[in-house]
Image 1 (tube, helix red, strand yellow):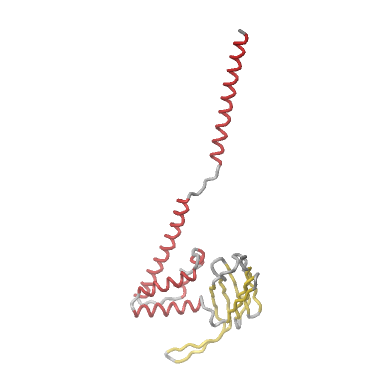
Image 2 (cartoon, rainbow, N blue to C red; image 1 turned 180 degrees about the horizontal axis):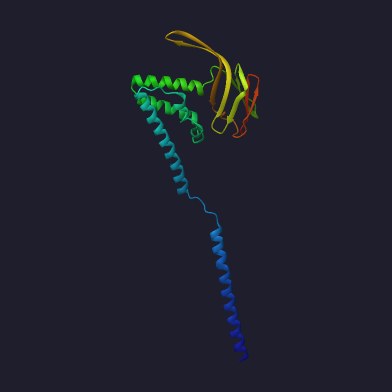
Length: 231
């Protein structure tokens, strides 16, 4: 009889122990499930990428409409008309921004008739000469196995007004220089001299390590150096 009661007590204890174990395990499992950080699915990543692309496309179409309207209405395209679109947001949002700039130019040019196309190309040439080309300033690129150096020689450079900003997509150099120039006008050749403000936008060298650009201004020379990407 005593043996029977003993086994009964053992059985009750076993049931109570099993129930307690299930009770304590379930909250821990729930806590772990709640505290686990959410992971972005492939579908969500694709949706974010498509959203960014759509935003860029909308900005491009808005700018193209503005350019077409000004051309057809006979208004000139000035530097701010281009700078407002080809800005830091443009350079930061594209893998190859300078190749994209040329693609935009070709597509826009093809939309116009001959007379409007000539106007657009003239405005584009003037803007790109001011922003993207460095023909009036001698520019050199040199490198070693460890670094890459870009040097721009600017006669009459004012170091106090020179600002160099570098990000992953471009190099932006804003400066003032004392220069002289000649311009053909209906009244003849006009010569100008004195301080002039410039903004130049250059591509980061292809083999440069992102985030390593450093600028030094020495007299009439701007030197920008990068570490070379490891091979």
